[in-house]
Image (cartoon, rainbow, N blue to C red; front, side):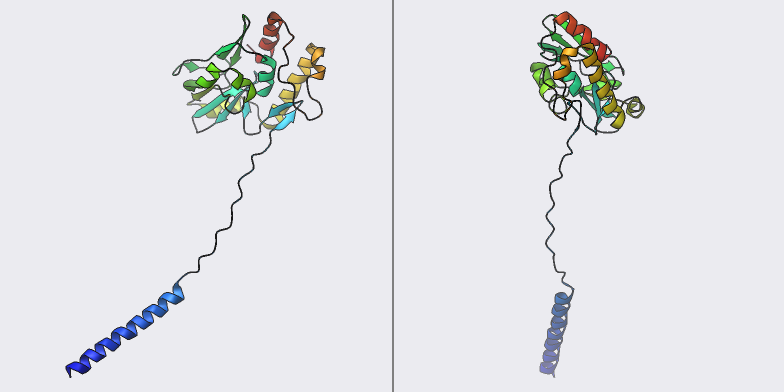
Length: 224
């Protein structure tokens, strides 16, 4: 009797194991190979009279830009029109970390052979960080004004309101075109330097301008 009971128990375990294994085979999912994800292509900034105007930025009429990195943190730099109009820079000064900056007030000063020009801030707030690389090598701000040549980051508690005062999209492109046209009317010598055919404007628009006149022209366009 005991042998029969053992055989029955053993057979029961085999039967249970058989159905359990069969169930596992049936429900086991087939893993499909994940499709290859192509790397996103960064959109090319639109050219306006030879100057790049990235769509993801907002612009102050004084030719500085703002990029929202979080609801209250904003990165700031100068646009390409400004970088080419400034031309050769000997040095620049930036505000101290923690300093409060108001929208439309000075955020940087550029020096060239004894002459200087200020640029205004597109945003209001406390300076969170300063690009020390630009302070050490001002050419960064000219050669890569939308990238490594950024100037400061600002902790702006009212960034949303500040951004409403800035230019974007079609307005930003119109303002860049208007600035290029005004510069050409003011200084006809720039006619050949400002690209009208989709190419980039030359790197240093004011190389031949005397320092005193350079300061006067840049201050007019930078609203300083």
